[in-house]
Length: 602
Image 1 (cartoon, rainbow, N blue to C red):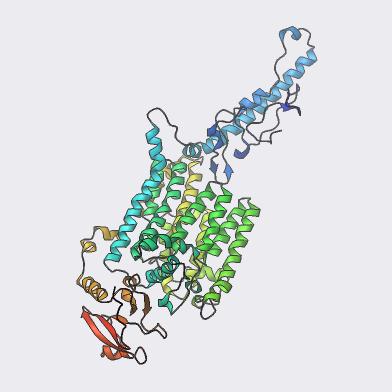
Image 2 (image 1 turned 135 degrees about the vertical axis):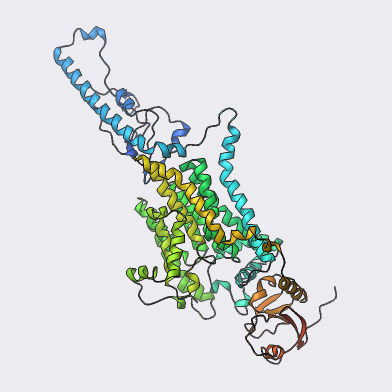
């Protein structure tokens, strides 16, 4: 027996053997659920392949609208008696038939009206979700539409790679971050623990942050051991996140609008800044978040949960974000699955923060707990922290402004809170602004939240709301293009971007003066350009008992005593160095005592 509301359910009842029993005269058709979820389809026969794809509007599945719902009700109406028997019918029977027919007609009218209202509410969204049919001569266009999200992602992969590689080529990396990850991945590539010497001799990076997914970078780095390899892989992952955003937008809003949103997302300032600032583990989190939320909006709950749980392997703070995804699943009636995801996120967060990272940390603790803000951790206190500073306010304006503030209308926006709270609650003001990579994980959240709102707007009954929804993608793309004037993509049109500076030439010469495979100490400026050449690389003054064979120092912002050589000799006990290179404030020193062992003859 088919379940109520099943489109394939027959109008008449069935015997256990499958034989149909006509509905008795005078019995009206069962009442029809007027909601979109239970609206019946027209054809009681086998469903076509197209009928298998249900469109959603908000939280409810869309009805099939091939024919009015009255067709099924009509089939359920008792047939008229044959002419031969009509002469023998009594007036009571005729009266009964007339009453039954009237009742059925009334039910049919009610059903038709309900189906019409439900169909009108989802026609636009349903049309957007349907795959284009391969008409004669039109198969090429259909394939092009299906590949469009990947084409957009490919274009941005080239742009992201160019942006980061040009910055690396111009020696524009000033932080040690890319060096930290390169040392960890280099050790992964040789099946060793992720030791990061610039954090201290034999420092295990799992004692700083928890990101085991970084091991996936190791095979390609083993083949091409260069920081550029990491930058290209990072660009690929950021570009990959465009696919679920553009793909879902094209299905929900149509090809043109979907392309606009895909381009706007690729240009979003959070991704631009992340690509332009070294290398970070969040490059895995961005596409995982995008695929998880695409599955959520498509009502593929298990896929959403699996993608969400992968975030636990990206970085320790994302455990709370995973818990929020579980909460969203719970309120969408996926209570068991949602509760399991939330519990996993919370348990993983506390386990990693208080057990795993302290186990690998030399001081036995999570090093970033000390950067927390004040003692007021009540909801009201945390809320006030979001707007107690002009930098924070502007960050929020930029975050939601790139979606024309429509993202605020979706429950998906709750996923922004964990990241915003820990950033704004920190005493480190570097977390508050729009620079660096900290906002990258928020980009797929706000764009897919906006798409959730636009989907419901396109199914609205008011014409002006539907008309506004049609124009939003172009507006959002315009905003994204205009903001490029203030973010890294503007460098593409600057001639200086493609020119070498004198200091860059001097830095390359200084690095070349150090033989490959040496033990090197460096200040922060040139760390990213030495990691793949040195056997071991330390931050000057943080090498413990190791006495580097070579030191390289940038004295442009020198803050120590004028006697540079005396300062260098004071760094390590019973050690002396001799300057072997100086140019444009770069100095290279070779250890003279104890002497550097000569390289064995090849």
